[in-house]
Image 1 (cartoon, rainbow, N blue to C red):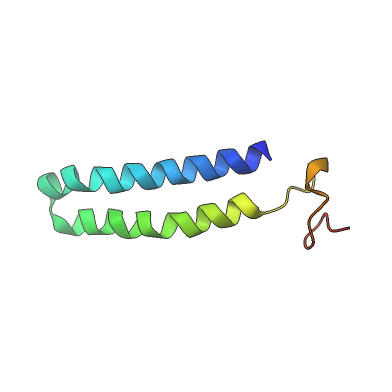
Image 2 (cartoon, one colour):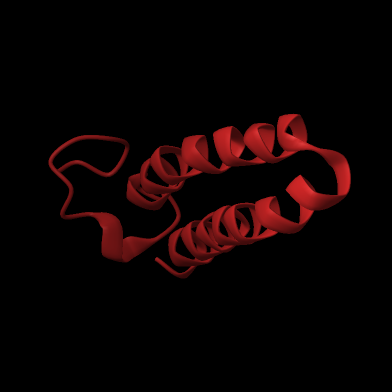
Length: 72
């Protein structure tokens, strides 16, 4: 569970940094780089959600899943 929360938090933090960093990048390098940063930041939340919901086969607390490697 800790691994999943860590991965989720890191990806969502990166997403926030990219969105917040797009404004200074717009003024320094132009709109193309800022739009690219926002596009990458918009793709990260679904990836973070998917990684946060994957069952960990080594975690005994994940054995109540209906599907996956620890399904009972």
